[in-house]
Amino acid sequence: MKELEKITTPTIIQLPKILDKRGNLSFFENDNQIPFSIARTYWIFDVPGGEERGGHAFKSQKEFIIALSGSFDVVLHNGKEEIKFSLNRSYYGLYVPEMYWRRMENFSTNSLALIVSDKLFDADDYIRDFENYKKNRNE
Ligand code: TYD
Image (tube, rainbow, N blue to C red; front, side, top):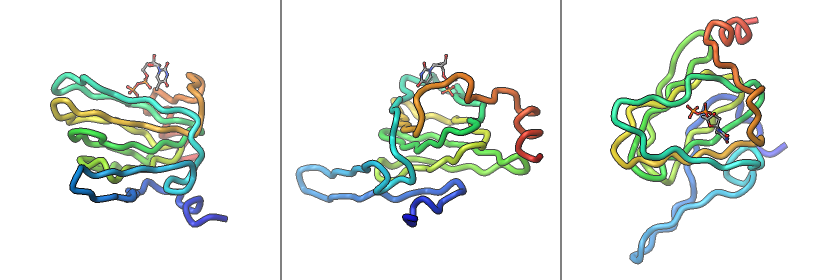
């Protein structure tokens, strides 16, 4: 088993950073830098000041979230406690395993959140009720 696949808790993953006078470059590729194979990419942009995104958990989907531009906070709840990750650089990201309640908040102006996931979009994979989530998580 690859080392990356052993990661089972939310983790900040540093990405390769190729520094260059012409401008810097960073990247990740299928299960070399992140602990899953990518099935889907989406991004969140033009978030008005003070708005929140998320407010749900995924039953099986894993995600990797990067602040490609600007900054925002990802607040995760594991059914017992909350932990906040501030993302503000494009050369690291947050791995979010399945079954973490998550919301994203405190978006800076012009921030851009890139999210890759190991699953295609599936509305049935969402848990949108927090009490229901906690019950499932703590069973
Ligand atoms: P949602 O995941 O609830 O957004 P957030 O967690 O950022 O607040 O998705 C918002 C809407 O977009 C919802 O109607 C589902 C749709 N959607 C897709 O069609 N495909 C996708 O890949 C995603 C992430 C969302």
